[in-house]
Length: 636
Image 1: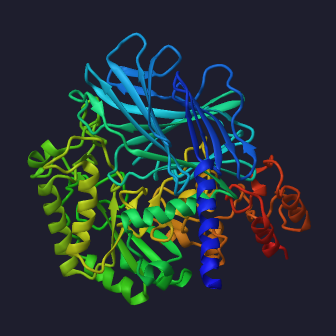
Image 2: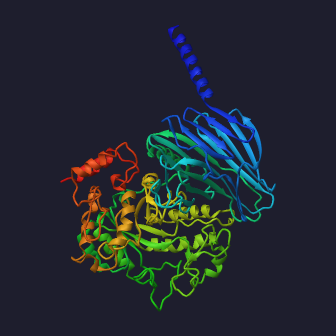
Image 3: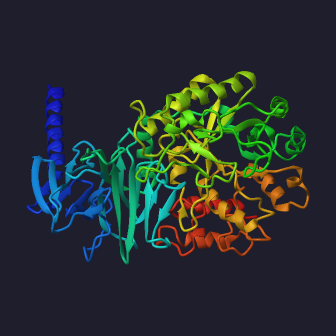
């Protein structure tokens, strides 16, 4: 009987708890389309289709300012002719779909042929604010729809984006407006807005690779962030755009809380492959621009071959030592992959020392003078709206190093490329392939029902099936490519953007990043080198050197030797000025690491944003005990 009454009490308590939760979720709809949403996590208000108020109930923080002036967050519709944004002059129709779901239709004020529909709902299980957006245009040419958040407090909220390698946008950011396109600059469908004790995050749960964009716009004390969804090309015949799901929620803690949540979703949605053990052991990448095995003993005397990857850039008969040039009597001939005669001997010698080798190929490149280019030309990728053909140096026909970018949705191209590489794989002991330009995904019409993104995925899969055991690397990284590559060659971040480790956090369980082939030598071009180093340190990118010949390891190359000595210490990417070297623990940049650096970091723990970014020693966007630990490890 006691157990019976205990169960009854438990059921009553549970019902009360559920009822309380249900009552805490409210969604109010006004006649002019105003929406007020409240859960246990947040309070949100929309006006004219734009989120204009956000209060985090978990931290008691408000991230928006009172609306004043034009909003920098935009909601609207885009056609080939241009963009229009909702405002108080647009006609409004409202509809309650359920207690926790509403829909607002906005009709263009001076033209009645465009409509933006915004469906807002609360997910009672997760308390996510779920946003569905669609649009119609009677005249056609419909490209996109966009919704946005405005009046966000520039002094209190940072934007953290997995874009261009990972970056943070805050009050110190130089630019005031920028677009980041998904599957180009924007690598994952996540935006984190970090306050002092928590924040909120916006994510898409689309796994079909719809083209999107996140837009940042700052105006004095406030900024806006907007999220755009595109139609698949071609656009001329498009009269409507169907919705995808965006989700928004608040959190307590630092940026890693929502980042981990999203990373778990990425793993479930895209099923990335785990790297083999040898990939996890790699500590250094040498971008090698020759195929002379005589240099291998010298390299082996300065590095640990078993933890070093040789990225072999030139290994084909028509390639010269310099990437930007070819032999004067030979023309480049992609996608032909018959190696130089000495290729096999080089691989055998490299493997005898313990090196792993990564030959460089083009994922979608075809030389215009290749015999099959006329057959592949109809599949050449084109600009989404202008229709121009796309390729490397395509507008410069005078150069011999010129490539057409072929849509990997073409079955004929995929079969030819896979066949070419498989012949090399069956003849030589291939460890890995570097798939150059594999990140390129352009909004082009489908081929045989496959979008360019789907063709990209399929080509990666077909390469893996044809060559079991081979590891693949790629250029850049995003959600189309990361499930299929275990190495990623990283570009440098644009000089007016601030690096942040968000992308490394998202992708590093499966894909290891390393430095670009264009990273200069620290002895020859120290200032240019320093520009790469600043971002790579934050991103925890694998060290990379470009080796042009034995002279690169002469005794006079003091910084080169210093860097190689630091490979196994974890401080390879230590910031240095011309003529001297400074470790990351030298916060005040006085040339030594001591208690003064500890004090400088300690003063900023839990406080306002520091004036010096060096106080954030590990570059993760926050100043905490981890930064103190890094400084303490370098003292003495």
